[in-house]
Length: 114
Image (cartoon, rainbow, N blue to C red):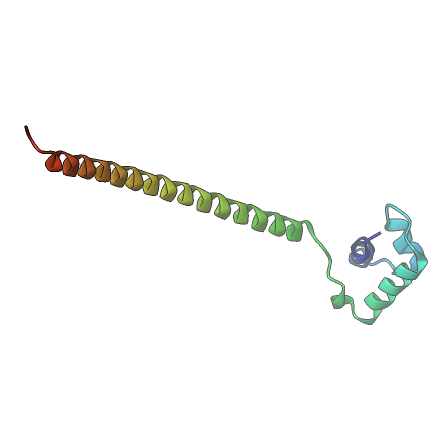
């Protein structure tokens, strides 16, 4: 089980003014955890509570929003590149047409008239 679930359980108990012990934390968890991990996290919390940040829904939402913004930026970049490719394809087609006309024009000038 990730340590973050233990940390969140500790913060939940602390916000309610309840004691932080292996029993109270373990009772808050949805699944079993190793006693070693549980004791280590509780010990770290008691030494420095600010060192164990609570992972909130806001943090998850911020990550999600950041990911969505990155996806939007990539989509906008793809659209811009597609437009650029279309413009370049149009220019190439126009140049090929001009070249074909120039070649046709030069061949007709070179042919002698009888």
